[in-house]
Length: 154
Image 1: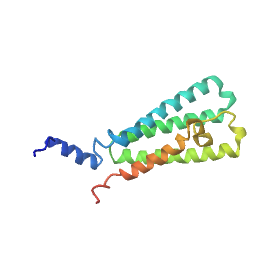
Image 2: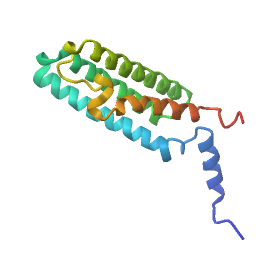
Image 3: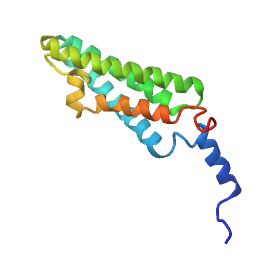
Image 4: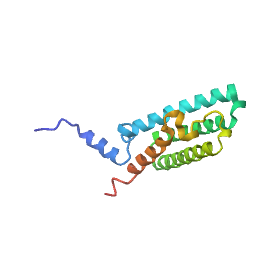
């Protein structure tokens, strides 16, 4: 029985396995990039609105939300870009995100008076269904499983 796959399909699959163009444009990689993009927009819009309309009510919360938005934008760009430099930029930004969620989340419980209104990362992202707590773990695991050279080293 003859195969209906084109000769180029195997090349695309091999490129995908080695960090090529297909890796981030299909499956879990595409979902992770999309979620980071969504969080970039939602955190950025929330922070911009809150800073513009009620900054005096909770300045720390709103500045932290703006920082979270910048981190999400950087992570989105790094995740959507190919290459070793982009890979390490994604690891770094998602690592910063995880530290931010854990630090701000803990601090918001220890000093609740500083967080009269929630930030994206306060209470470990409870206002966003704890996605800000889970997302960097998922992102780092995905990066680890898809690290450059992983398939070639087998």
